[in-house]
Length: 89
View 1 (spheres, rainbow, N blue to C red):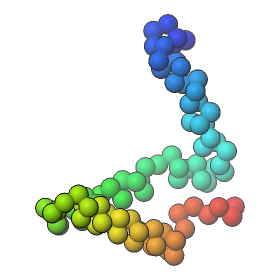
View 2 (cartoon, one colour; view 1 turned 90 degrees about the horizontal axis):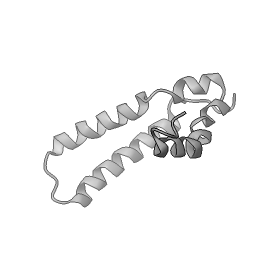
View 3 (cartoon, rainbow, N blue to C red; view 1 turned 30 degrees about the vertical axis):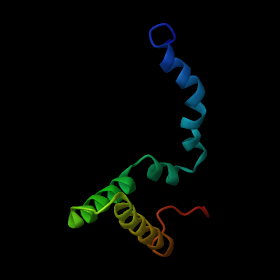
View 4 (cartoon, one colour; view 1 turned 120 degrees about the horizontal axis):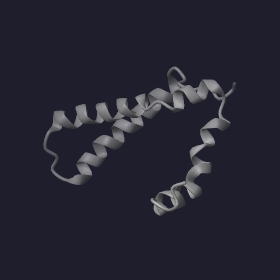
């Protein structure tokens, strides 16, 4: 249908459609969580909040260290806290 007007889109869709539909391999309970970007938005908000406190970084490495430490801390919380998705279902 898109081949004549949008050949690049049609080619991309043919290549990527299988990957785009892999979400349907998961149980319904997981799909409800996977379709939402709430977790990603929360992480982005937290990064923005923490980098605003510093406001000026001496170099790129300092910013990377702060964000890496924040993500490592968040990973620890996710591993030890309440499970967002239970894969034993």
